[in-house]
Amino acid sequence: MRRVALIGSASALALGLAGVLTSSAASQAAEPTAAKSNTLTFDVVFSPFTLIAANNVRDPNSPFSLGDEIVFRDQLFSNGKQVGDDAGSCVIVANTPEVVANCTAVFRVPGGTIAAQFVSMPGPAPKELALTGGTGAYRNVGGEGTLVEFGEDNRGSLTLRVLNLVARGGDTE
Image (tube, rainbow, N blue to C red; front, side, top):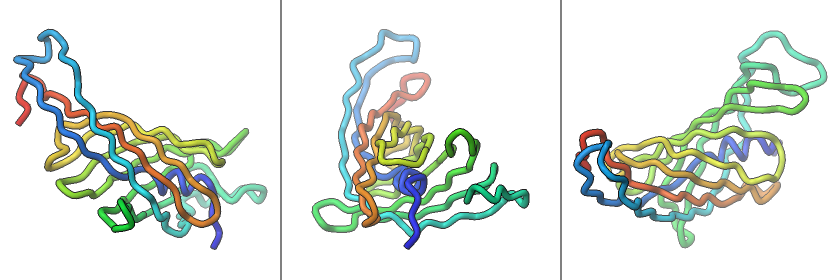
């Protein structure tokens, strides 16, 4: 199975979240309150590498062209049991001097979904994720995460540090 580290990153993208924090701020302009975070950790089984060649102008020296897209749907596990999945895509935004992709992902976990964005480059370096929102129990979340690819076995780990944010006007509901 052909894998590219960029995929794992894209694939990994994303994956787990939780942690709801309650805040009693009356408005966004009020004194900041300490945010309470919840850390979620998942084992990830990455999907096979899937490239959509969106750019008809191909570089014979590269498997990618600007605008090409990598799509993924990975499985998330906790204590050996599948507890969720993710769906996402990465758009190739640079080919030289290195491949760079802009990625988005949505993680489906018990209680709702969590959205994330990240930049992906080939290689074993951990991918840093920005958590940008969600649904259900995660509708007011933000935070960050780390996706790590273990190598050629299509496995990795995802750690999400989830913060529950207060909506404008102080409504936490």
